Image 1 (tube, helix red, strand yellow):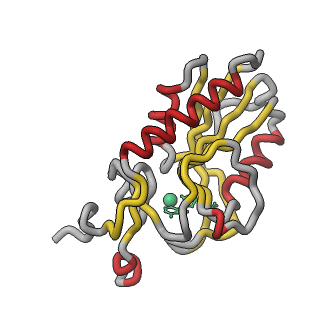
Image 2 (cartoon, rainbow, N blue to C red):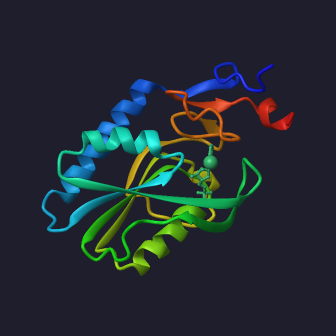
Length: 188
Ligand code: IMP
Ligand code: MG
């Protein structure tokens, strides 16, 4: 028997496909407007794995040239609570970022540890500018103050899944963002 039933494990849909689409378009327009006059190249950094669907949809709505790269980071802790430690598992293919305006594309900001660590890392490579973009923000959970330049939706403190976001690596393929039923992780 399958351990997970991805549709039935959703307590409620929080952000529909249509709402995601309109947030993606709005953020892409803001990124386009903010970088249209820059002499540098726009570099989108997709944070694997959760930001894959968001980055994919976002880049198609950006109306100026941009290039794409990937990073993978891991934070240690239990599956629903992140800790302060962040480790780079896969790094950018660029050594120095002097000629780039970097936009970090994240699925969700929770405690802020992941992004604040990434920011230090990218700034140490002398990026011309670094901006942060997140589809979902959970400000109630913040432990470190990070400035989010582009934000899709602010949500309450609930564990969400779908559109790239996972629990135990599952549910990333749901096309919307929903709240996971507590019993899924409490009965583990
Ligand atoms: P932070 O370092 O606490 O800001 O955590 C960011 C990372 O934690 C995200 O990139 C996600 O991988 C994970 N995360 C935080 N909250 C959620 C959630 O509600 N659902 C799924 N993953 C989450
Ligand atoms: Mg995750």
